[in-house]
Amino acid sequence: MSDKSDLPATFDPYDCLQIVLNPDGTLTRKHGLLSDATATSDPSHHTIPSKDISINQSNNVGVRLYLPRQALESSSSSTSKLPLIVYYHGGGFIIGSVAAAVFHNFCSNVALEFPAIVLSVKYRLAPEHRLPAAYEDAMEALHWIKTSQELKGYADLSSCFLMGSSAGGNIVYHVGIQAASKADDLFPLKIKGLILHQPFIGGVKRTESELRLMNNPVFPLSVSDLMWELSLPQGVDRDHEYSNPAVGGDSKALDQIGRKEWKVLITGWTGDPMIDRQIELVKIMEQKGVKVKSQFCEGGCHGVDLVDATKTKDLLIILKNFVLS
Image (cartoon, rainbow, N blue to C red; front, top):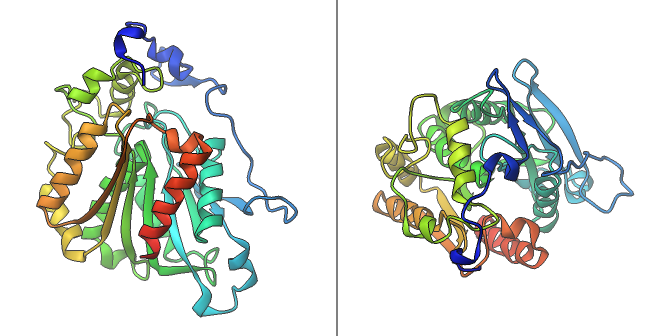
């Protein structure tokens, strides 16, 4: 990563994200930043078959389901059901979707490499639907899973992992806390662990890594600030519990995760401005007795292991070892 003095002093966050804020408070999202990939059930395709399923039409909540061929070929045997990975995409709560090629391809790779059933959750975006709308949709997907006929015969509901990238990692943290306190309501779905992949977290006081990387070209601080401004409830700052787990009211709730002995994995790169906060989150969880593992690598940038094929492969090995251990 270049020294920040070599980089432009400012970035226009709206231009970086290719969004326009309209007078009515909605966003116009241009499609150049995250190109879409369509779901395909074509068996001749060299990818995992996938399909889109609506859960709640009024809120436009749904999932994209990835079924590895191992599941399709052995669905009649209860002993051969595959683990279930529930995935929440990134995008700072304001952009992104299950159809974005970067997330679609990653989910396909997870389903293929493990193998596992993968459900990528389509949730409402801010500022049209500010937090906690995304958390509510994420929980609704878990309640849908427990009675879904789409998964019957394929997924081992007693071996479920929640995983998310960036804003999706933030969702996993907050939904994981909710799910731990309401585990009986989700039966027969049983969560075994949480995977926070470069989780999107923030705070008012700048960390050393945020100051050092404030003008990095991949995820400058002005972009992060805008995402929080547009996604948090109106009238609050980045020290709200949705953004900053260090000052939020979740510390007691983390006890629930510790008591259930769920495994937690947090991954990151030193080239990500949020690395200091991610390391701090590991320490917070450890203090609450949570079984947390961390994998922090040198260099890189935010989202690098979603776009760099070699790093994606390395991440998949880490994830597979964590889930199957």
